[in-house]
Image 1 (tube, rainbow, N blue to C red):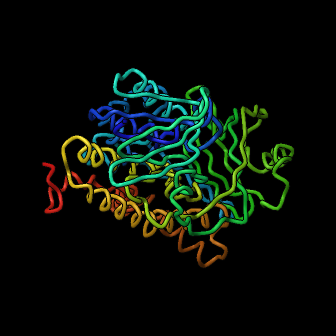
Image 2 (cartoon, rainbow, N blue to C red; image 1 turned 90 degrees about the vertical axis):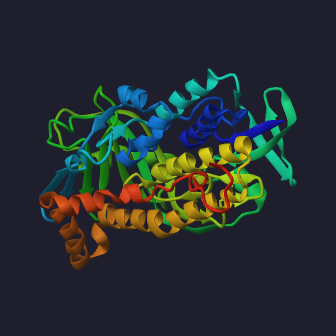
Image 3 (cartoon, rainbow, N blue to C red; image 1 turned 120 degrees about the horizontal axis):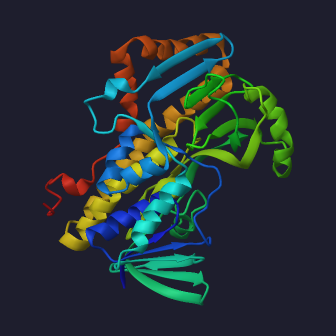
Length: 402
């Protein structure tokens, strides 16, 4: 019987599994696909998550493969403004006062490679969870893999299997919220954004052609994410990319599309992130529109707080009630902070807030960030407020783990 089975081979699943294995737990990670999925998704790791990557020993590798950056540029089409600031106010306040740009598939691969070298960890691709039951002592999982159907048992299970989570559905948990009426199209493209004066992270604020444009590799590959009406046929989205680029690409010299992916946006949250011996992390627990990069940020913070707590329960005899505290903390952060801010970010970038008065108020905050270091620091600290400590570290009366 395994100490833990992690379902899902995205960055949150691999980070959770790596932390547990490094702590000494016997871990199995299963992923339904045959490899790490490399379609365009999240690509920015806020400075606030880098301590967690450092604790796992993978921050330096992520930075070598990707690159660090500190600048932000907001282009306001209605006013013609360029609002710029950087992360220099974080100097001396954190060991890593910068963001890292790196495709989320690359981070998952870094963690995968570390995990695959460990004797107490196993990875099975092409293996799909088909059902689970649990009792007071274990979780019994039904899986279908290359060798056929199999029953696996584990002391605890972590669902990191995305927004359509089989784990969450097997638990019968509601996934309350709503789906946005628009579709995001994430494209990876070679184009001269830097020659056109764009920052490494540029937000184009416009009610029709808002976009998030981010450099994602040292060789000049950029991510350009824009929005279209979800009533348009998804199967023909590629036919509409050239028209979108007419509005979004600023430089001469054309472009070379590397890849693209359409996806629906949701604001949803599971009713609880723990049920018995099963926990949910990342998109299996909560989903948000990606404006501002808060979805993956929240998933990483889920993992950073869960793996030390679950390791304490498994290996040190800590009170399992700590897992309830972890679940409650992470649920509250998403509902009260992450989701509302992501909604506000989307309204600003892609809808220009829907009205001149509201737009001017939002721009007032950005203008203040550009000229006032105290305001900039206060607002930059938001992404740190999404972090919660592993409850096992609290040494409270409900914990016997020191």
